[in-house]
Length: 128
Image (cartoon, rainbow, N blue to C red; front, side, top):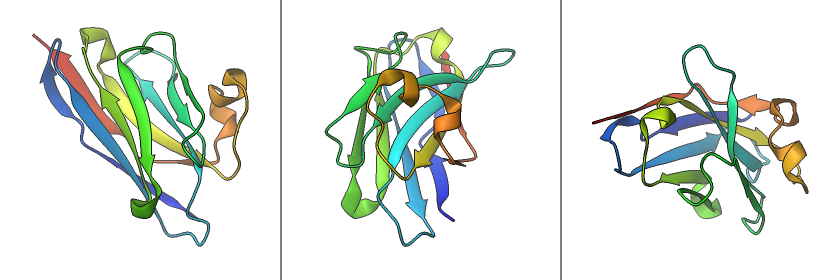
């Protein structure tokens, strides 16, 4: 099955930027629809962003819309999450997730059950 490895997390100041990466490997089917989720201590895992296999369709969670951008480079089997204007409430473990077919509405995209594969997570901490 596919393996997902997140990277790029770290400590950043309020208002700063960070770019996360999610590399996929280990599968003959290399182009997946991808999502980003995050989980802060004591909170539910929250939908952040979705991108279709081609990159043409994206969805964002309300809390990150206008600040975060999801993108992909299929030649590198990698999906990115560019995070700008970071806030303390963005502090969380960020997870990438994959599924084999595209989704066509945000309700499906934001459901954890839509994704069959998950990475191990990368910590993002936003502080002043």
